Length: 589
Image (cartoon, rainbow, N blue to C red; front, side, top):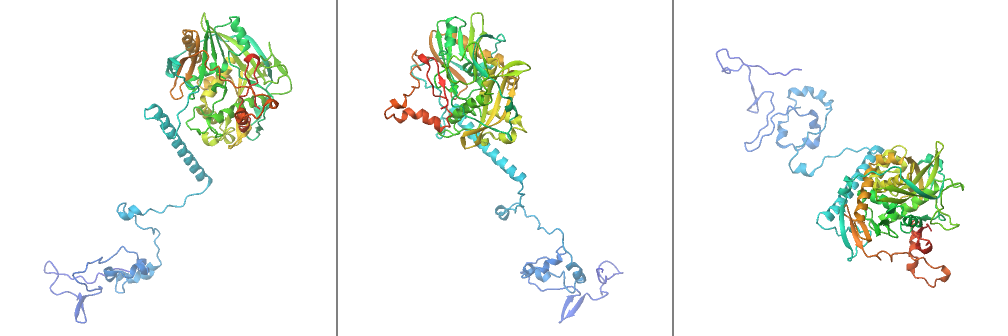
C-alpha cells in the first residue's frame, strides 16, 4: 500500500503552476466544485477551527463511543478512517493492534486540578518485614517525641523560662530548712579534673560475717532456660550507717583512722558526677575525726532505675513504673537475687567475728564485712566497711564476689527486649543499661573495687509480665572482673579517689559540728550546709507494738506494712531495732 499523491502538473515555460492543469483537481458535485478525494465540511467564519488532521491519534480512539460521540467541531474533520481516505484500507489491520504502554500522559504539576487530586498509591506489601519497619519507625518517632519533651522540660528549668505547669520539678532528697547555712557549692565540672592515687591493696583491719558458696549452675541460665526468682522472707538484710556500726565505733575509739565511712557512701561520692537524682550525705566533725553518715530511709538505701535515661518515667508515685516504685522493686529484686544464686546447703565460710548486727539465732543473709584502711596522707587515714556477698573457688583459691541484679520492667522504655537480645546481642543490652543506669553500675563497680572482690556477678532479672511487678524471672547471669569492667565503663579509680580526697580536705577545714552534703535536684553540683546538732534525729521509724497490745490502731500505723504488701513485699525498709539504737535491720516482710 502506498500513498497516492495524484498527478503533479509540470510547467515547462517557467515558475509556478501551468495555466491549464494536466488533470482536473476539482470535481463537480451538485453544481459546486470540490477537491477530488478530499472530504470537505462547510463551516462558518465565526466557528473556531479544531485540528485539521490528527495523524498521531490511535485508531481505537473512535471505538470509544463516550469519546467520539458529541465530538463537536473536531468530528467533522475526523477523516482518519473515512472511506475516501488512504488509511481506510489499513483500518482492518489497525483494529487488531493494541498499544503496550496505555498509561495516560503525565499531568502538569500546577493548577487547581493537581493541587486537590492525589495520585493513587500502589498497594504496599503486608509482610513481616514491612510491618516490622513500620513498628520501628513508630517507636523511633515516639522516642523522639519523649526526648523532645524531656529536653524541653530540663531546658525550662535551667533556661530561665520557668518549669512547665504539667511537669513537676524534681525534688531534693532532703528539705532545706531556712536555718541552714550554705557554706560551699561545688559544680561537677571540677570533679572531672581531680586525681589521686592511694596505696593498693589497702590494709584489712577486720573481717566479720559468713559467706555461702556461689552456685555455678546459674552461669548456664538463659532466656530459654530461665529461673523463677524466689522470695527470702526470713533472711535479714542490714543497712547500718557509719556511726551506728559498733565495729567502727571501736576502731574510732582505738584511733585507727581519722575518716570513717561505708562503701555505699563512698561509692555515692566517687560516682557523683554520673548522678542525676538528688541524694544527701551527713558529715559529722567530732574532734579530729570525720564521719560520713546517711539518714535513716535515705535515698542511698534504694537502687535507682533508669536514672540517666532520656525516657521520662511516670510522675505518679503509686504507678508501678514510677521512679519510687521501681527503686523499691529493684531493691527487692537485688536482695533476693543475691541469695538465690547461692548453694544453700549450710556450708559457710566464717571469718574473725560473726555478723556484728545480728542477734543470736537470727537468720541473716550471706554477707561479709571487710573493714579496710586507706592512707590519704601522712596525717589522714580512711576506714570503710565494705561488703562481699559470696565466695567461690577459682583455680584452687577462694575468690570473693559481689552479686547484683539489673531489672527489666518494660521493654518499651528501653527499646531492647532482653528475652530476644540477651543471647544474640548481649553487648547491645549492656550498652543500653550503661546508658540508662550508668550511675548505678558505676557505684556497684566502685563497691566491688573497694571491697577487693575478685569477681562481680550481674544478673538480668525481668518481670514475668510488664504489668506484673510481683513476679520475676532470672534470664541470665554474667561475671566480670571489677577492674576490667571499670575500664569498660570508663570509671577511673584515680578520679574516684581524687573526689573523695577533695571532699575530705574540705571538711577537715570545717569547725566541729554537723553538716549535710546535698546533690542539687536539677543542676550538676553539690552543696554543703551547716545544720543544727539535733537535725535528722527525730526522723526514725517507731517499731509497732504487738497485736495483742494494740487497741484500735489507726490506719497510719500500718501504712508501711500495707505499702510493702502492695508492692509485692518489695520495700526492704522495716527495721528490727538493735539494742540502744546501734543497728538498722532491713526485712522483707
